[in-house]
Image (tube, rainbow, N blue to C red; front, side, top):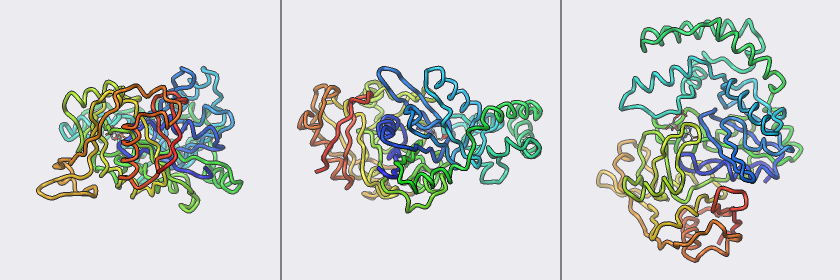
Length: 426
Ligand code: IMP
């Protein structure tokens, strides 16, 4: 492994949690490098379900140091709640390390996230309303309050008052909301400071030292490639960089320290929230994918939109991330279909596209060109080796590998750890 990035190659919800968890078994350090509690990772260990949103999946292994890097935005209330939940289930969260340079999600970020979405009406992004976008807005406008500020009450209060003056004006004058009380926020965050103090450190240094020791390190991306603020389907994206380059910046390491980039690809595709989605199915087949695939958000419970695998978007993800291998997930969901499709090109506004279009108008008008594959119609969730899979399923996997141009080394056929098959690339 030495240092590998693992990330979603689609719009998130590819089943990264499970693959990360498996790789974490041999990792020494697992690092989150962007996003916050907008992510949702479900991990199933011996019939127990763990839904994590901020703490890296690796926390379930006592030998792993879980790290939350500077590129993340942190809601301290959620972080502490997640730690408490883990503790109540017998997992020690004391090893969790958090960058002092990560930015804090404040109560006004959550409030603004909700009211801005309402204000946008039909143009809404469909955010998770966790305050992610407003927190990153403050980071880049240099109004942000960082985790390290919690430990200097005077500075914290000063920064809070400056921010709150502006936020309360927005909340009351633009969005017709009640103002927030600075005193109350201050008191609340000082309690968090006390509880978090032992977890805060220079995580860039921690990771660098681990790299120097030759430790196995996993950099865990949240959301997915097509939700990247720079490379995704802007403006219907998240406010950070889930793509592989984001790992270097969001941790504070050189990009040359990353050895592998593993893209997690669902055997079909889904997205939550609004925005263009060329292979979306609005018919019974789409509904079937949602129901059989259990495509409901871990964080918000929202019904995901589903469609056939999009190889144009996949090749794009290979390119912008420099994927070195693919882990294919939820292949078992497709066992219920007589025929399965893959989009290999689009037509939009009279032109044919084999590369993912960067122009929003083009993307909105894409009509996919599909190739059709024979289904296998048998339950594959009990398969114990890749070779056990029906020929049709193997042909489907081979074809995805051929279209992506990157080896598929892992195929997942169910939520449990055991339902993961190792594949020798062709
Ligand atoms: P935000 O990250 O809450 O600002 O939401 C921005 C967009 O990213 C919305 O379309 C969300 O539905 C989407 N999004 C955020 N986190 C996730 C995730 O973990 N999986 C899938 N979509 C996500």
